[in-house]
Amino acid sequence: MSFYRKDEPGEEPAGEPVSRKRFLAYLVGGISGVIAATVATPLVGYFLSPLWRKHPPIFTPVARVEEIPVGEPTFITYEQRVRDGWYISTLSKGAWIVNKNNGEFIVYDPRCTHLNCPYYWDRDKGMFQCPCHDGKFDMDGNVIGGPPPRPLDRLEFTIEKGSILVSGQTVGEGA
Image (tube, rainbow, N blue to C red; front, side, top):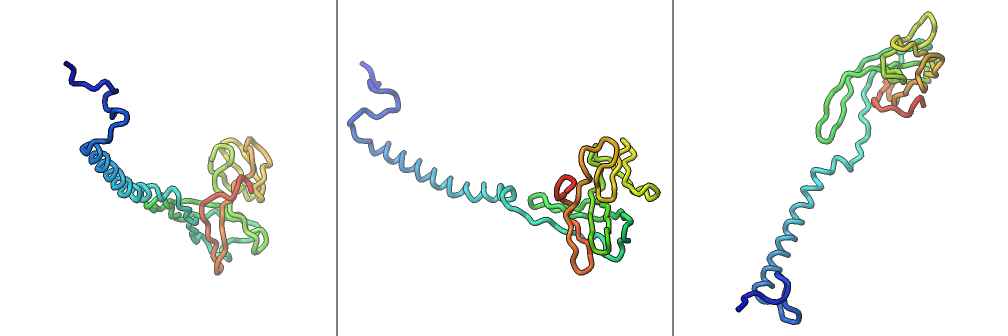
């Protein structure tokens, strides 16, 4: 004599009503699933929200407009606040600022576009030079010699109340 049903294990026989015990198991399982989803959704959203939020760049004052001489690139260093999720850290950074004609400014990333080496302004030759691989750039950031594949990267900046503020983000490759 067999105590097992002829149907598949765990399956109700076709046409028979669901037993009270099985109905209560379904009900408790469904309610538990709804409660778990209700609790988990805000938690997942809380931990993933920094990925979805767009934070505006943090602009840092780096120099006064009158401190940058016309036609002479000036290297400045500054402390940049960087946001990573909930954590905000401070980094030491630098930039080259060029005052083209008493009001038209360009702010360059201080790394060569060839292999990210630091470059310098050669006053005698009137150009930026990268000593590592002999990259050469004019005051407008255009490549005039050496292996760099593109012009110097420019940094996003704004001028407010006589101060130059830099975000530390590039605004395009040589743009």
